[in-house]
Each structure stands twice: as structure tokens, then as C-alpha cells.
Image (cartoon, rainbow, N blue to C red):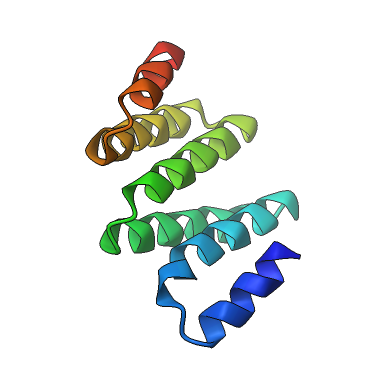
Length: 105
């Protein structure tokens, strides 16, 4: 399992994977129907990825969080997360991805 391998690498000191591990954890909690922990873990993952300058992955995390919020009926939160993803993808230089997300709004 990818998540377990990331846990091993992070424990060995690979700090560049901490945010991605948090994102995988958030997805795990979402699938396990642990809403509150999922919300908190998505937020933590986004913060960690932005702090590390991983804007591409922060964009992915915002998109996934937005999708999860939409699936749980929180359309306002979904829109805010997609807009946040647009900011991060734009900062990373992914213009086509930005255009695609803007079309979805």
C-alpha cells in the first residue's frame, strides 16, 4: 500500500513527503466516513504543502478536498477549495489546469 510506504519514508526523515502523506491520510479518513478528522487532515495537508512550496500538490489537495466537500453536500466549501486550487495551480504555472477548473465553477 502506498500510504504505508510513505509512512516508512517519512519516519526515515523524508520531509518532502509529509504533506502528501497527510493528503493520503485525509483520503483514508474520508473513505472511512470520519468527516471531522478528514476535514482537519485535508486542511493540515494543504498547509504543509504550501509551507513547503509544493503548489502543484497543494492544488491537488484543494481539488480533492473540494470534491469531498461537494460529496458531503457542502457546495460553498467546495467552491472555496476549487478557487484555492486555482490560485496554487496558477502560482505553479499550470495555466491549462487553471482554465479547466475555471470552466467548472
